Image (cartoon, rainbow, N blue to C red):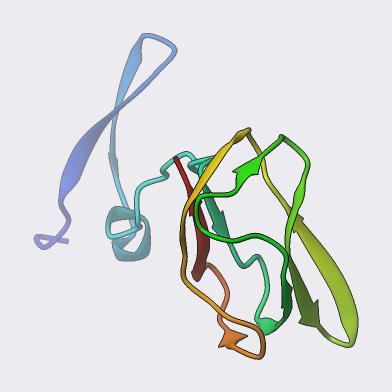
Length: 104
């Protein structure tokens, strides 16, 4: 019992004194996704790259086709902008959360 470390946890203006599991205490903090960075949501293969660096894109425009589990997934621009950098080419195998395209 001596190795327990208590921490204050505030919820709705009430402060609780509690312990946290090691997994919870060491968790990666949440960061909001950046709409200018297009990442792979699932591991797969890049089938087509439909844009080039410097290309102006509209919100909802298809940037890439990612094939995963024998299905083609069209990755769309979440915001309008200009393609700053393309990190993949056709035929590349990508992992989950890998950065594919960055807009500026």
